[in-house]
Length: 266
Image (cartoon, rainbow, N blue to C red; front, side):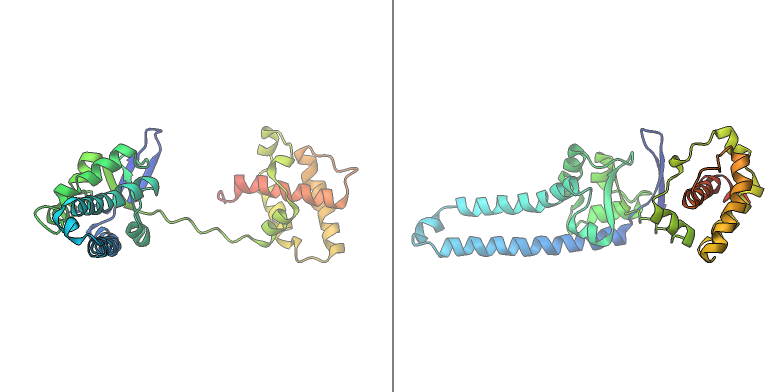
């Protein structure tokens, strides 16, 4: 009945996949937000009564409806503005949504605009009918994209936050490359020349790099020269006049270049 994932093609023709936030997660976020607002409302009411009965001219204040009207307006603005302000200025997340890990976005995958945030939150008045958010809950439960009326009119959806991918743990040779500050751009090799280095050369440089950290310095220097004599000639690189460190660096950069080409081919 309800789809849990939705594919969105942005105006830039980029396809994105989002996990829709269902009734449970949205309700949990709403309850948290309501608890926060309840505390704020109580503080405002307490302040109102303190002002009313802590004033010397009690009779004048009791006869005037202005303080009560102002308090009601302030409470309404805070209860409505809380959702509007947080969703627009905090990337579609109120405090409750942030704690649950959901947020509001537009149907095209972009962040909320001022207008879409205004519309979806203004229509909370309708979604709350006849009482206790009944209409909104029914709409979220039965709609294929878990939308309430405010979402339908504003063109928004509520989705789960996309978890950041865990960084892949660096291998010993990758740590060495990072330590030396080496990048692929430091070695200028023509594209067609790089294409001539095939699986045989990739296996050679990969084997060299896998043994790089384990070998004693003397054996590593000897192996470096042997591998360089084979690879440098084929890659059109100059071997003469280079120090041992420079040769090592060149082989490590070659590893980076060939890794992009061959790591997932074999």
